[in-house]
Length: 307
Image (tube, rainbow, N blue to C red; front, side, top):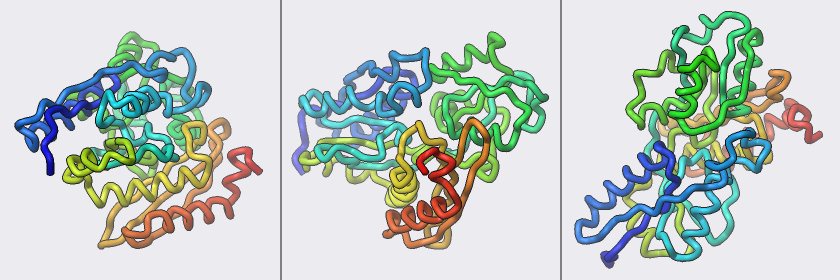
């Protein structure tokens, strides 16, 4: 392997994105002591538009596009993303060179007054940034008032602390990575809130023809996480895959097999259908196709307004 003089990592400039990029920077610096591993910080459209929900302004791909331009223009060798923000269909010029070992994939409750979801009284205001979490809350806790909240982790916590909300439902991984695990009041079981595809995992994107960078990143890839998230992302892709679809998919490696659970529904009504499928690690896409077919048989397209 040829050692490059410089390795440049494109990243958003939110605190969580910078933590993720610095994490990768540190791992690469250990492997490449003679190289300069640098960050290229960028502000994306997803960071700039905070007055509307992502589902109304183009989806989570808004967090990725500017970083991909940096790759195309050869201003960066790789981009680090929260995998759940990466579009389900990448343009052919890009590829995920590594899917890193997962942090906690579950959702969590953050509140200054209440210890669990069950403890929230009727009419309590709960903030969430995702249609998937909204669906979970409406279906299982219909007496709560669900409101949209945007902004980075610290911005959302500040809104909670000043009394705009009684509680927030967030990804546990982000809080743990930022050293804010003490703000978590309850880790929500996956039986109550099934995670989003890719939640808790980091994806490293490069140009498809960049074999040298792919070789550098190969040791950072975690095959079990890649298999699990490939199944999850396959479900999302099969059902229109974007944050405009209230969809959950979570796969776990159990006994050498991949166990995939998936759920899709209508965030406004709280109605949903769900399924489970088990298959081989090397056949993640086929497993996803099985789950999608079963969800469609139960009326998934009707719930999504596609039928």
